[in-house]
Amino acid sequence: MKKYIPFLMALALLTLSACHRSTRSAGDRPDTIALEPCPSFSADTAMAYINAQCAFGPRVPGSEAWRECQQWIAEAFTSLGCEVELQQTEVTVYDGSTVPCVNIIAHLNPQSSDRIILCSHWDSRPWADNDPDEANHHTPVLAANDGASGVAVMLEILRAIRQAEGDTLRTGIDFICFDVEDYGTPQWADDVDEGTSDTWCLGATHWAREAANNNYKARFGILFDMVGGRGSTFSMERVSREYAEPVVQMLWHIAHQIGYGHYFPLRDGGFITDDHVAVNRIAHIPCIDIVPYHDDGPSSFGPTWHTLSDTPANIDPGVLEAVGQSVLQLLYNDNAQ
Image (cartoon, rainbow, N blue to C red; front, side, top):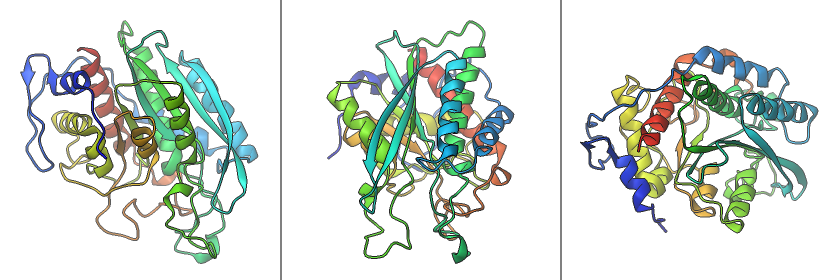
């Protein structure tokens, strides 16, 4: 069922300054909107954040690399002025076993009751079960794109905000690094339905249930997933359009206006099982997913998805910049309302 998008949030996103614009469907030409002053996103710094995470190795839940990287992420957000909490639990995975799950939550401007969410998963897939070499199917993925890129973009967005002259962003932002997103049923599993959607995004599901139970409110959210892969473009994911159409329209149109239209084509993508589904359907917060959509190749998520090729060498700083700068501009436009 389609969820209600609060009128004030939709109005704020669709009415910027004195510039009227109407909600348009994919494929329409974007309107010109008034752009607020906005800091610059550094792709080089984001790349350094990816390398730092990957230096620990695959961040498979429960592993030593996972524990070390968890501490690094928490300290990185703390050093940039956030209050950080670790939401710890255990979750049941596809084969009935349990694994530890730690969602890392960093609060910017915690005193503000007007809040939005930026989120990504930070764990690595335990198995490269989409690798073209079957011998690699039980080997953990380094997850430079499918995990580290989203965290890196969030950290660089935060750094840019804190380094901006006057640090004038008033909105409260909760940066959420979801755990155990990528422990879904492996393709090689016997006697298990590999298409079962509820084996994925377990950290986000736990967070969303806690948010609903605690009456947590945010106007909208943006999920970053695989936002650095070479050749990536980001079509309008359909669950995002169902629940958070005004946010989709604003981000894609901003991207076109500031020169990143190639990366954000005005067309529909697919219906993706991802962390934003729980945020929308359980926490009832309109949340979009910036996720690649490839028309050709072995996967719509790109050639390195769930393979041993998901390494920093296959990250494109230009893709990181397109995503990060577009979201920064959206944040500053939204902040001006």
